[in-house]
Length: 238
Ligand SMILES: Nc1ncnc2c1ncn2[C@@H]1O[C@H](COP(=O)(O)OP(=O)(O)OP(=O)(O)O)[C@@H](O)[C@H]1O
Ligand SMILES: [Mg+2]
Image (cartoon, rainbow, N blue to C red):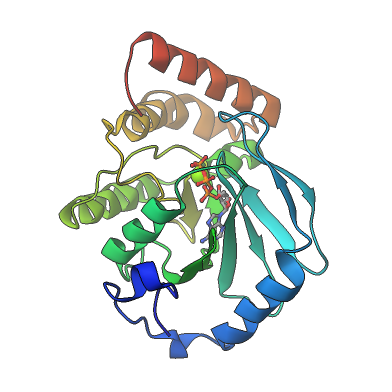
């Protein structure tokens, strides 16, 4: 199967080896078109807030939302997720191109199929750093080092790591992985990741980590908003 099963993408795209998957991807694609897409309810209320999921068809499970898309898993496909863009939200084509350039790398997901505003991606089992703070899970330094290395790899593929914030990176068995690379074609300074690292080394490691503090979601979200305003005031791109 072509990585991107669409006339626009298929000619320039490599064929990915889907035989490593425990279930044939074609049956998942069928389920998406027949059961999932007609029923799932997605809405983008404000562009700077995560999209709202109004209905999740059984037996699908919501794994997370971003400002552009929502990500779901089906219980019969343990190693895959479906990322579906909310109506009217841009970025699908760029994300497809970014996955084409990333190919297969242990610190990133992988794209097996992309069409009609949804992508089938390798599932990354882990906890976002945002949720680590919320759950009081200790984040070892190795996670930060792994993500730095992964971003270097992305740069070597002609990409510009961008918008690398706490919900876009994960800790998996003490290692760091990058869960969302959709913005890696856009112009940007990479300041979000630099700022996250400053927070990690100056605040998290000396003060928060030893205390194992659980930070409430409301406080994390307020900090996110304040951070975004400061960035806009200082006219820095993420
Ligand atoms: N491959 C994956 N495996 C497991 N969970 C994932 C995967 N991709 C995304 N998620 C979960 O879904 C959430 C939303 O996905 P993602 O960040 O890709 O959406 P987005 O709309 O592009 O986000 P942003 O607002 O950062 O641009 C992530 O924070 C993560 O919790
Ligand atoms: Mg994201």
